[in-house]
Image 1 (cartoon, rainbow, N blue to C red):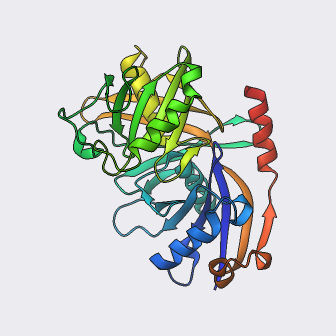
Image 2 (cartoon, helix red, strand yellow):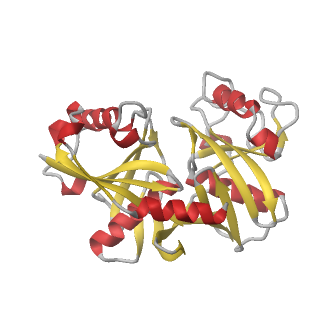
Length: 324
């Protein structure tokens, strides 16, 4: 059986995108895990590996155009991925010739649409990030209080103040200066909360955030199941939410979010009935078109795989150069 896939990225958070609805039959969980192992390894994987797999599947219930699954490089499944969702939105928009629709994710059907390009030749999509929850059960976390909002957590640091939110991926966020953002303390804390620890039994994404100016932040993220990444879409949205809540930011105002992999825009909304939700606006870049027999992918025979590089990465790198 032949498989065609795309190598894609949002803010250089990169994935192999596979449309299972195009296959004769869906992949088994064992096949998905084998593909994840073969493709995503940073040393032995295809095209330098990836942060994970994006799977496009049929919707069982509801009105969404398709379902998205996110398989991290370590084999765990993420409840959502904002950077990945933008690339899936582009794939589906071009496949079905639609500019606005919803995509089913683990916890919600999320609105997506084509957006004005961030720069010339940088294809851009806008996606909804929700639901937002603060309570311990949504993270999950073990704490005497039901929420953690701008508090010192002695087990982690006596100086930094942390907030915890699920969007729906769980995030631990602190605002820091540039030296702390790039310092060793970050990795120590991230490794602690993603190992065996008394606070976060399932681990948690960790973001250190630097305020660059009014409505402008820099977010660096250690992703649960991946490690340090160029960018994490839900982390940038969660950090934007905390920026608005803790730093007298404005709802419904665009926020520029810079990251190791580039830049996105976010908008934080306040809804009286449902709380908060965010919009994430950024690139949806296709770097390679890949095809071959399923057996060759599963067995790692990459010399038999057809790989065609696009010109989109060069356009994205030009965009990066323009914002630095």
